[in-house]
Length: 506
Image 1 (cartoon, rainbow, N blue to C red):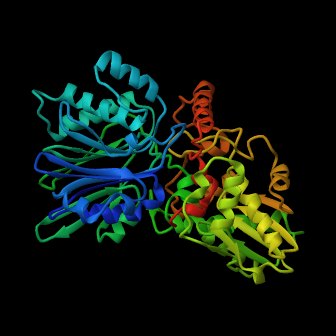
Image 2: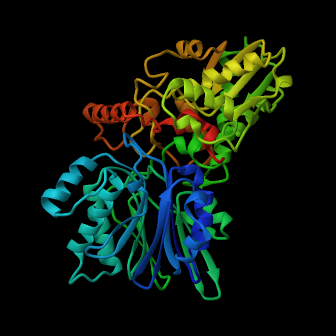
Image 3: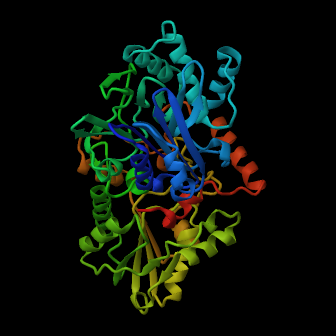
């Protein structure tokens, strides 16, 4: 998962882009980049680390211009992190184009071969985002007349990108001399929203991964980018949009609502915070229906993203809600180090218990999800060491049984604790006296309750149904092979973000 941002303003845009990346920092913490345009000249600064590590005052001074794009990165399916893959990517032929991408192309290998054999374009990294950039550049060249672009030509090129690319992608690109282009895959899996700001000099526009960036930067939310749609804001600030895919459907990734997005964001018309509240209500209903025998004294969330669900769950059961864990926000990201033992130790560094909330009580711990189970098992043990008599565990999401290939870097099936275990077996594995999972139907209903217009979702990590229809067992096996190779070489950073929700800035 990544955070993307593009702005066409009436004044210098570098500070807005920097502030926007800080607001989207939870979506990617391994690399960040900003590119601004001054007439037809691009200015770029990007590098490894969080936003505050990549940009200094001298860097911001070297980013002039009123137009720009920005990106914060976390590696996606099967990719080991490489500093050369920090975004935005740049290509100079046939037009100067920079591009930031959130998602994952499932046919990237095929496209890379086509780039080399047919389009005569060289791909320099293993990033599918660079592949996507080169597909866009090639299609712009092919559709343009004498290398001249207009909105209609650009939208035809995006239509060809949709025709060639498979998977999930929300894209923001900047074309030298023309403006900022944004588009979303025909299934609408990864999010993108449009904001605007009226000034004395004219309207400013923004496209971002989440509405929190729009709100906090003083813009107003216009709407979401529709599945298959392309939006172009030219250098003069004129807004153009067009549907570029022949067949579309809206299937937002439901894990955005469970965990990925900030609670103060609205995605596809549904408040993330409200959705998480309703997830807690649904869990309370399940406990009243099937777990009445549990003698629960107190409900305690695992910080941070599970708080709304835990609060509403406690209210639904008429139980006290308490904060039992304190999160240390200043510990380095030691959990990315390889090995089970190191990840366990990192939980202790990130969290500490408030003993009075556990001693002599039967506690119900609430988390947003359970992925590897390493974190969950360690937290259960911490609760017992804090003096809890019994420890029950509730997950606001269903069992994660399958890898996600659409832009969330989840572990392979062999690493997913629920992939080959029943719910009771998972409960025993993490040491809980009882384990309660959300039902998938209840999770979907929770988001629909917030926005009834949402009918279907991308839920592959829970049910193994890959909505694009092109994900085969061979493809999943290839991802596992790449991940195993990365792990064997000592790079086990991937997948750790979802194993520990302790790192997100929510």
